[in-house]
Amino acid sequence: DSGVTQTPKHLITATGQRVTLRCSPRSGDLSVYWYQQSLDQGLQFLIQYYNGEERAKGNILERFSAQQFPDLHSELNLSSLELGDSALYFCASSPLAGDNNEQFFGPGTRLTVL
Amino acid sequence: GENVEQHPSTLSVQEGDSAVIKCTYSDSASNYFPWYKQELGKRPQLIIDIRSNVGEKKDQRIAVTLNKTAKHFSLHITETQPEDSAVYFCAASKGTGGFKTIFGAGTRLFVKA
View 1 (cartoon, rainbow over the protein chains, first blue to last red):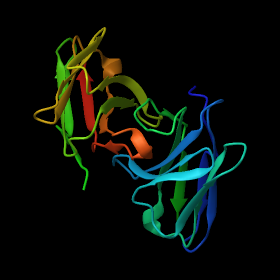
View 2: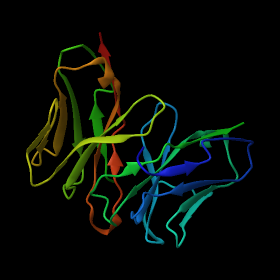
View 3: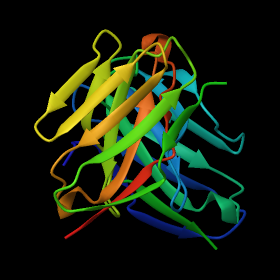
C-alpha cells in the first residue's frame, strides 16, 4: 500500500457524460500527478499540481481538467467522454515540487466508456 | 519534444537467466532516471532509480547503468525469478520547475519457470 488512495476503483459510464476521479496523496506529499494508461499502453502524463497550484501540463485534452484542494486532495474531471477515454487513470504523489524523486502511485481508477 | 525510447517491448527469459532492458532519452538536461515495475492489474512501483551524477547503482539482483554521453540507461536483472514477470517502465525527468516525467512505452518481461 503506497498510502495514495483513489476513488472510485471502477467507473462505467456512457459517451458524452462527465465524471470526476478523486485522489488523496500520501500524508505530507504536496505534489499530485495524474496519468492515463490505455490498454497495454504506457503511462501518459496528464498534469501535475503542487500545493494547490498547477505545476506542469502534459498531453491533457481540453475536455479534461483537474484541481488540487487546500487539503491537498485532487480531482480529475473528464467531460464529453468518448470511447477512447476508456483507460486506467493513476494519480501519484511525491513530497516535493520537482519530479526528480520517487512518485508513489495509487491503485488507479478504471474508466469504461460505453 | 522530449522522448524516451524503450527496448525491447517484450522479453522472455528462462528462470535464472539475466534480463536487460534499454532506454534512450532525448533531453540532455534530464537528471533523474527511475524504473518502475507494474504487475498485472496493479499500480506501478519504483524498483530502482539513478541520478545523473552516478554511472551505476545496484540493489541485490537489480542494477541500473547510465551513460550520459550516449543518453542511454539500462536495467539489468540477474538470476530472474517467475515473480519478476511484469511490465517495466523507464522514465526520465529534469526535476526542477515541475517538469514532467517522460515514461518509456514499457517492456513486458516473462520469466519462464
